[in-house]
Length: 336
Figure 1 (cartoon, rainbow, N blue to C red):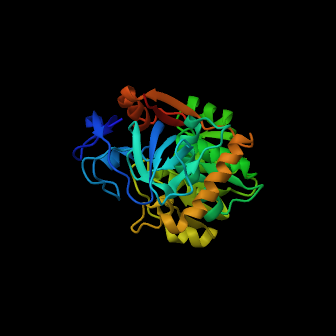
Figure 2 (figure 1 turned 135 degrees about the vertical axis):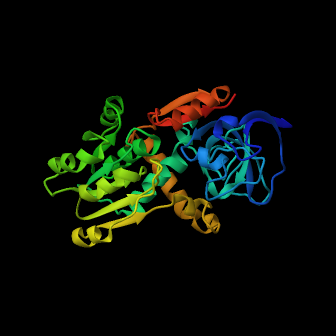
Figure 3 (figure 1 turned 120 degrees about the vertical axis):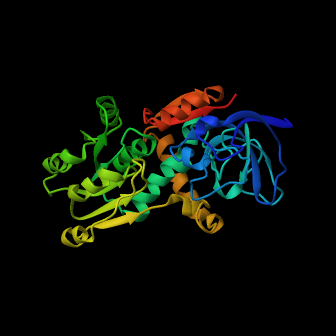
């Protein structure tokens, strides 16, 4: 096709002001591939991205969407790891909310035949973030207990599954009974209300050691503050994001008294979204992690991602479901 359908951000705006448009096909540059997109994941950071408040600002106009899966249409002459016709998933700078995307081959990952593309689309960014955070930064060990905030959202759902695969126990938090039930069905041992005032007492009642070994926190705000009281001596707190809207400040005296570690984790650094583009240097490390995740899912060692499907023409409902935190699992746009 000479052009294709996609969502376009023509100026910094509220996400609801995006427009479906025909987009002209652009040529491949060195090291790039062209993908026919079948499914694209919707993330919470979209609202920051299109309003110009994210740490990276694409050149206007652009198509948002940072995770997708489909088939390769074309590869640049210097790309040898991938081939046309191959089923792949990708971590993208942007461009996923369209029928086609051009992206660097470094962050494109072959999908096993046994894995459907909708599931695969959720793995490189969402599950990659979780796996890398737990393995590389928190050094989660079998037998440990991890507290997962926002446990019914896309990151939280993935965190519960990966934590269990790594042999640890999960205590989940979520805002509603339905979301807590979803976390339990997903494998959490316990699910608690995300109430900062009562959380520490509830967690300590479930942990004979006096608290959890690891906290996985994509929420921040008051829940992060409560997590300091939920952690056992020597605990590690993973700061993943701030969906609450408030970036917390850490009282250093609590870190000292309880021997706590607060660990920041920015997966974007590994896939080219940092202040400097390190994706090529770090690509083998990330490719190894994504390969392990896909293997675990295809072998039945870990459930497939929980996915809510919307057609591209339902994009407004899909984004609203994510932004209003009604989503259970990953919201996915299916391309026509």
